[in-house]
Image 1 (spheres, one colour):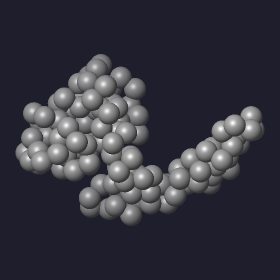
Image 2 (cartoon, one colour; image 1 turned 90 degrees about the vertical axis):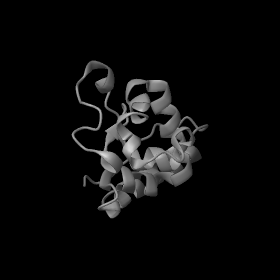
Image 3 (tube, one colour; image 1 turned 135 degrees about the vertical axis):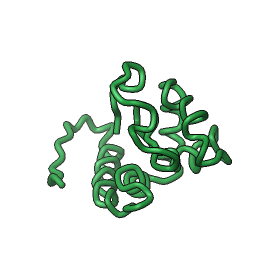
Length: 125
């Protein structure tokens, strides 16, 4: 999820009223578990560091983007969205969504050079 400018305008507080592993940080609102597990910058950080180290991602869009890319690349769409949308407590929640994202990405990749206009019919969830 992308929350345009929210970290920088105060539209939501660091953690988004969640703490430790569940704390949502930065413009992409990745949870602290994902950040400390899959972003090299925070590898080995403790779950308690969400309100100190996590503020780096919350307050710096370049750090947030770097981590977003690393997490997505390491997990792939299905796992990425499962963790981002469902969290640790319900990781299956985003699996279906992740499958549709993967289908879309595969389609775009296959047609990037043929000039085809892209229309995609994905049922709402």
